[in-house]
Amino acid sequence: MKYNYNKEPLKSLSIKPFLSMVSDRNQVIEKAQAVMPQSEFNANHLAKSLHPQVQHVKIKKIFDHGDAKSFVLRPDQTKGTDSLAYFRAGQYVSVFLDFEGGCMNKPYAIRSNPADALGGEDNQYILTVKRNNPGFGSSYMLDHLKEGDPLDISGPLGEFYYQKFRDARDVVALAGGSGITPFYSMAAAIAADIEDFNLTILYGSRTSEGILLKEELEQIEKQSAGKVRVVHVLSDEEKDGFEHGFLTAELIKKYAPSDRTYSLFMCGPKAMYEFGTKEAEKLKLRRRFVRKELPGDCSNPEKNPDYPKEAAGKTFQIRVHISGEVREIQAASGQTLLQAMERAHIKAPSHCRSGECGWCHSKLLSGSVYIPQDADGRRMADLKFGWIHPCATYATGDVELEVYPVMEELG
Image (tube, rainbow, N blue to C red; front, top):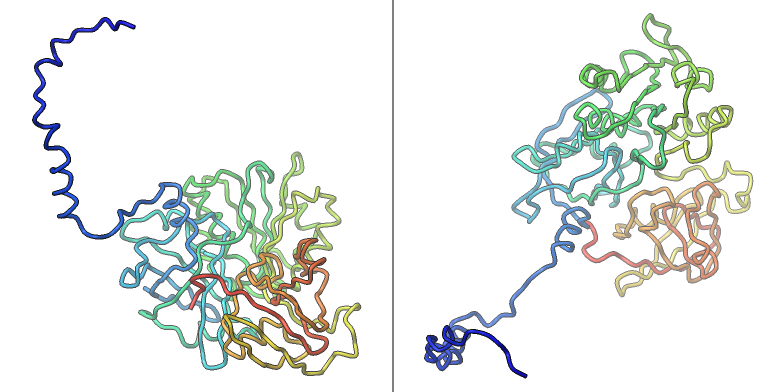
């Protein structure tokens, strides 16, 4: 086969560079460090930046709100965290706390605007924590943490954020107490044109003096160009300019759009969830349009009608296999297995503390347990093969379980 091309340029090339190529390469190799070159796919780098297992932060500033405080968290670059992971408005982080009475991972919604986590000098999260008795995590943070203290937190977690293809463009939010924090973040994101939907917040408080972040919410409402509306509802006080009573179906109808579909979001104390769920049923909304934030720690299992009454008031032996060690601890009947491990300073993995996320996924080797139906977020395979979520599981007899800590677990 003949190739028709001009051979003249090839004739002008010198062969000397080719003859020295091997020796030149050997010289470069000899001068190089005796380590393998390292590289990382951009997709892997992006995944690590968006979903870090741990973020090291320092408390830059603390704002006091009476029975609540806001903690401004900045990256702790001395420990390798250069910037905080971006988050969706409504997500939370799990804060690792280690104190005299135990250790725990406690979830708190990120209250700040997602734009604050886009890098730059003021890269930060803000967590607003309200005292919740008997809330060991909130009490420790409010009473002991100070400016300059280091903390380890998780990456952003949770799915309680606006989803365009699931949620209606109009959202009515029911908030109680510190349950305002994810909605504050959503409102700030709307005002900053990061999110695009209409948000009406029905915020329940006991009195006007006890409204958390009232002035800050008013400022965001003014900046939102009519997309955010905040309605304060007082249960223990009647006052001009405020609604009085509870977050009922009638009140929701008063402020919800009457001519189009809307989504209903809820975040607050458990009592509000129980009441709000019953009121939401009266509205006949499609299931996809009713969204609830995870309620946090399970408590008072004895109140449930299906709880085995013979287990109430008793203490059981718990045998825990973790990280190649075996620990013998005790758990009271009203204490989740996770809480019992935390009191014994066992660093068991957890995040949501509501039985949903599966981060504390553990193998039940033997024994009897009780899991509330409304907190049982296990898969069918878990039920079949004996896996549990310790954050929502109570011992009803002596128990043995295997706990699998996550690599680089907090603390």
